[in-house]
Image (tube, rainbow, N blue to C red):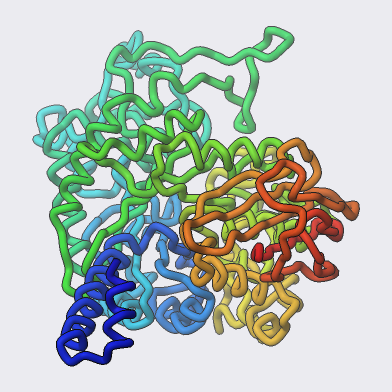
Length: 593
Ligand code: NOJ
């Protein structure tokens, strides 16, 4: 309606109409702008930074906040809308920041509050939001709350943590822990504290005691912490280990999972595998999330009007559980709980990818999926999806699924240059305590946390000192400096895909429609938005060339012409939708005309 009236006025060149045009355009563009700002996260590209490993600027071998600020031009050029920083708060660094001893400051290893303020300001100038990690399940055992809590059974902070008596305690022995619950990082989740003669619960390391979320004071403390950072202009939070918040008050044992031979399954730490039914994803999580979201929704900030986003670390059993994490319109929870169903299939299986993408399209109530394939806790893409021969081509396939599907895309620093997992080869070199406890079956997470590879100078340009983890030898060929001048590089591929995601109308918000759905070698889909040319995507999941006919299932006419948007190296341009030839692990993206 509006457009028609504006066109007519333009023809008539009437002064009165001219006034109408100006006001209609400005009202419309203001409304559009407001909606875009409110919904910035819906088609966003979010980049995870492990600050320790991104860029060191003071020569101590550890990355810092100023190092991130230094690379904002690079991130903007890549097309990043927000950066998520893993924790930069003061911490004894037992779990490299996930053991927080002060939630309202910056660890001197990473810089100062002034550096942080500068980062947020400069990021804003680059249209990049800064998302903080918020660890609410546990603190460091050096946090003042825990120091108080463990000091006596009558201390006002005693009930801020999860304390219980053991079984069969005597004057000379602690007896046994309250039950069989295990820490994610190996062995019993209960730690005996001799001073007050009780056990405390820790879902992760001994140095990470769990907070008691049945205590209202804990809720209030975190709302205050959230306000503290929102007032500093952050663009939102990623809630760590959110499904761990509650434990079953019955303290009943968890069930031991048995293998086909009837014997208990044993994990990498040598412990029996449990079903986690008493310690994971209990219903109280949703109540807390509704409360935290309602609190966040009361905030507005001058620098970034619009929504502060809430991202969840949500490893869940199925799509139904993921659906619940969004909450309801009346009681919203996360805007973006991570969809780990798709990204951690860890196998190039067309049918499984198709099923998970269909779930994300049809079973989360038209909410926005947050797709993610990589992070600081899992081996990089090469180890989970690569075949050792075509790793880079396979990464092109994965990144196409990530950026060409509907939703928000989250990726991990270094993916864009094809960085490989580089695990330690000797136990003596391991930094991540999981790797020390679990060696050699579990080598820990150092391999995916190695320094960012900027150039071919010493230490890949990461530090002038001794890097906290060794710089992988692949830095000689995989680095930003070389790749940014090479149109066939992984970096160029990521930039092009992200550019398409941001600018092509169907790729921005179009629905995902699966095509050629009985094909088990090639994954194909179409992005379809009203009034925009459809975009088709085909990704070959095999090491052999494949030919696909995307007209076969009736969604597209065999006569439709295609306009190439992106083809992976070695591919050729198809003439029509009924014959698309793909190289081994080749990708084609084209607009239907
Ligand atoms: C999940 C984080 O991603 C991981 O790095 C950390 O060790 C655990 N939560 C405990 O906070």
